Length: 69
Image (tube, rainbow, N blue to C red):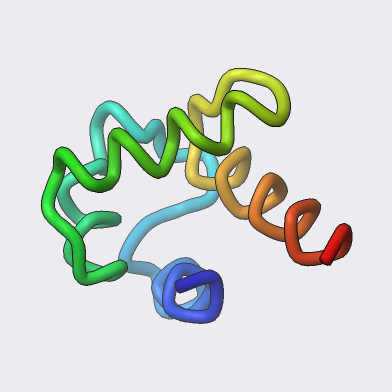
């Protein structure tokens, strides 16, 4: 999922500063999940850290989770 997100940012589909509220449906498509699954994913990440507001926040959080594993 993280690589798909990075590819989408690299290709210009969206910027890391885009908000999840505005671009959540596109992120859900990239991850191959529905919008409810995306909300659950974001909530799970938020339990481990700060509020996620942007695509960049989500990417950093995913990097931190991977680094801990």
